[in-house]
Length: 65
Picture 1 (cartoon, rainbow, N blue to C red):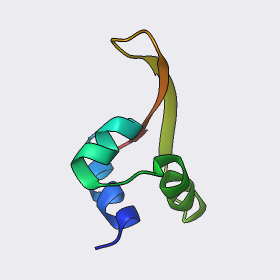
Picture 2 (cartoon, rainbow, N blue to C red):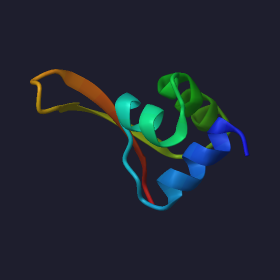
Picture 3 (cartoon, helix red, strand yellow):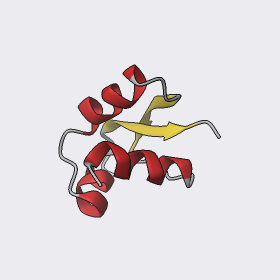
Picture 4 (cartoon, one colour):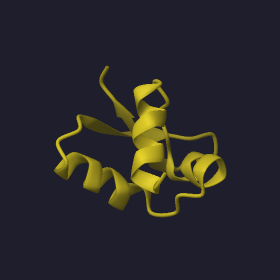
Protein backbone atom coordinates (compact mmCIF):
# COMPACT_ATOMS: atom_id res chain seq x y z
CA UNK A 1 0.00 0.00 0.00
CA UNK A 2 1.49 3.35 -0.99
CA UNK A 3 1.34 6.56 1.08
CA UNK A 4 -1.69 8.00 -0.72
CA UNK A 5 -3.63 4.79 -0.16
CA UNK A 6 -2.66 4.76 3.53
CA UNK A 7 -3.77 8.36 3.98
CA UNK A 8 -7.01 7.79 2.07
CA UNK A 9 -7.92 4.82 4.27
CA UNK A 10 -7.05 6.76 7.43
CA UNK A 11 -9.19 9.74 6.44
CA UNK A 12 -12.05 7.45 5.41
CA UNK A 13 -11.92 6.12 9.00
CA UNK A 14 -12.39 9.70 10.17
CA UNK A 15 -8.81 10.55 11.08
CA UNK A 16 -7.77 14.19 10.93
CA UNK A 17 -4.04 14.51 10.31
CA UNK A 18 -1.40 17.18 10.76
CA UNK A 19 2.09 16.77 9.29
CA UNK A 20 3.44 15.63 12.68
CA UNK A 21 0.69 13.01 13.04
CA UNK A 22 1.15 11.73 9.48
CA UNK A 23 4.90 11.39 10.07
CA UNK A 24 4.55 9.50 13.34
CA UNK A 25 1.65 7.25 12.32
CA UNK A 26 2.37 6.54 8.66
CA UNK A 27 5.90 7.78 7.88
CA UNK A 28 4.53 10.41 5.47
CA UNK A 29 6.75 13.50 5.40
CA UNK A 30 5.09 15.34 2.49
CA UNK A 31 1.48 15.36 3.65
CA UNK A 32 0.42 18.39 1.61
CA UNK A 33 1.76 16.82 -1.59
CA UNK A 34 0.08 13.46 -0.92
CA UNK A 35 -3.22 15.20 -0.12
CA UNK A 36 -2.83 17.22 -3.32
CA UNK A 37 -2.55 13.96 -5.23
CA UNK A 38 -5.73 12.69 -3.57
CA UNK A 39 -7.55 15.90 -4.46
CA UNK A 40 -6.44 15.62 -8.10
CA UNK A 41 -7.80 12.05 -8.08
CA UNK A 42 -11.17 13.48 -7.07
CA UNK A 43 -11.23 12.73 -3.33
CA UNK A 44 -12.91 15.34 -1.10
CA UNK A 45 -9.94 16.21 1.14
CA UNK A 46 -10.47 19.20 3.42
CA UNK A 47 -7.73 21.38 4.86
CA UNK A 48 -8.07 23.74 7.79
CA UNK A 49 -5.58 25.78 9.78
CA UNK A 50 -5.51 25.03 13.50
CA UNK A 51 -3.49 26.33 16.44
CA UNK A 52 -1.53 23.61 18.25
CA UNK A 53 -0.44 23.54 21.89
CA UNK A 54 2.82 25.37 21.16
CA UNK A 55 0.84 28.25 19.67
CA UNK A 56 1.93 27.56 16.10
CA UNK A 57 -0.60 27.29 13.30
CA UNK A 58 -0.55 24.12 11.21
CA UNK A 59 -2.69 22.53 8.52
CA UNK A 60 -4.97 19.65 9.44
CA UNK A 61 -6.27 17.40 6.65
CA UNK A 62 -9.48 15.39 6.80
CA UNK A 63 -12.21 14.03 4.58
CA UNK A 64 -15.92 14.72 4.64
CA UNK A 65 -17.69 11.41 5.06
